[in-house]
Image (cartoon, rainbow, N blue to C red):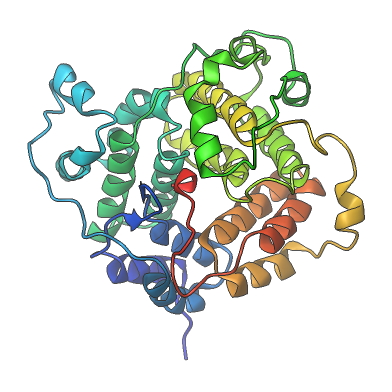
Length: 374
């Protein structure tokens, strides 16, 4: 029996999930993780497992119907589309707008036009707007010709980003002298008043400007070549993930998956967007550290080597991720594998292994799904 290749596996997955809207989370509706997880599973070489994974995901995670459009958004009227940013009740309107945009223009030109508009709101849904858009763009870039399903998925990724758009306070910029490692080490942390769970995380995010060092950190990072700085970001946040076994295990994975997602898209964009993208990514990283960690934990040390003395290679880690089934584990393992191939570092496979052990395997229901992971 012929095994499905990447393209066929992704399109079959998109067809199987075409009727799904956003996930029903605990206290908030979340991004639809299914298309991202399925695409990453296919990239890991498990295209034959994608259809089964999708069917299990549909059972495990309850969803709404796809959002219905209500009032058209005029892409040519800046005051109109800006007024709709961050309004989740208009997710259907945003999806319809991007479907119109993609029907009338090459998808890369649509991406290039809207990327700088959406960029300041990258924190949207804990970066899932960025990440879903990037997975969709990778599938489109790999296709000989875009399919309607792939274009719809890109529209949905961009629509989620726009509807969940959230600008963080402050003005980030690469105006400093510090490396990523130095900037992470220099950022003061504030102990949490209890476990770093959903309620605590949302309270801390609301008071972000009050944290000592936040404003200063936004401009502390030194400029660098885009792809080199992305590697330093993903390496350092693999280290951060390893250094905090005490916190809820999902949010900090986005310290790696967000810059790894940006790397997929940057080659499709004008170079003048690179520096701003990197600056906003660093702002997101700063927020993740202040909101989801209460101290420096085991960052920057080698304590993780004692916990994970025998880390398997990525061939074995990919197999374990496919068996584990959780969408964040699959995406994180794929991102770490890809980043490790570009700039090998033992923290990538160790972090992937840590996530596989800390995050519960795919369940038969969505009880306890964390709204901050949306």
